[in-house]
Every structure is written in C-alpha cells, then in structure tokens.
View 1: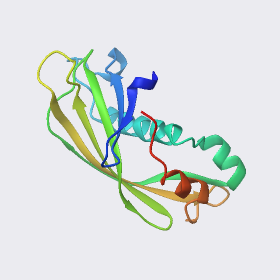
View 2: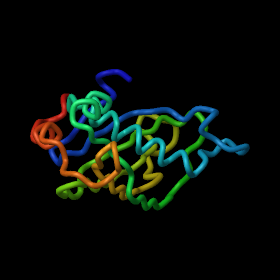
View 3: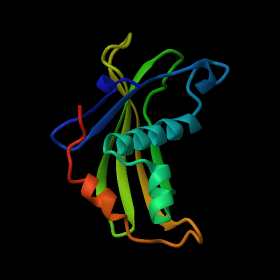
Length: 152
C-alpha cells in the first residue's frame, strides 16, 4: 500500500485501494462472497494504521482486542479478477465498547468499466479483554485517535 492509497473526506470516510487477485475469485473469475468481508477487514485495519493505532501494540499495552460481533452485507454487483477496487469505512456509531462501521466496496474509477457500487456492509466491532473476551470500554488512545483526521 502506498500513501496515496489512503484518504478520507470531510465526512470522515476512510478510503483504501486494492486489487482482486486470482486467489480472491471462484472458478468463474468472480470474487467469492466471503472475500468481501476480508476486504472490509483490511480496510478497517488500514484505517487504524492510518490513525497511528498498532493493534498488536494496543493489545500488549492495554490487554484489549477487537472482534466482529455482527456483519450484514448487501451484494450489488460482482467484482472480477484484476478489478481495481476502492474500499471505504466510516464510523457510523460509536458505543462505549463497540464501533459500528458503514462500509462499501466500489469498482475504482480508474478501472476498466464504469465505477460501480459492488457491496455495502454494516460491521459491528466489539472491544474485548483478551484474557476472557468480556466487553471492555474502547481504549482512550483509540478515542483520541478518532479525533484526528487521517493523513491523505
């Protein structure tokens, strides 16, 4: 990933570019449905990195980790082998021990064919204690990072 692959807009939407590889597709060259969740996960992870949050260090220093509590995805159009994609994430709701993300996957405007919405997802991520997986408040470092704009 290059610095230009990460951006946000005024609405707090994080953007991350990726490409569809052979390993992402089924026998017909179409992205296998479960891989959309992987793309969304990678986007959220890159969002944290762009905020300066290292999940390994955060877990070591605070004893917390993040787990997906629920995921709902609407598939609109297929992504295909070699497509350039744009994944987005924004915090739709901030709870005491959870984040709800609104995410999209689009065919990138620079890709062959028309830019298109491929999938939309709502992902709820819970903050839990690593030792027993019980819900715990979001770390202050994360809450502080959410106040900063993501560097473009």
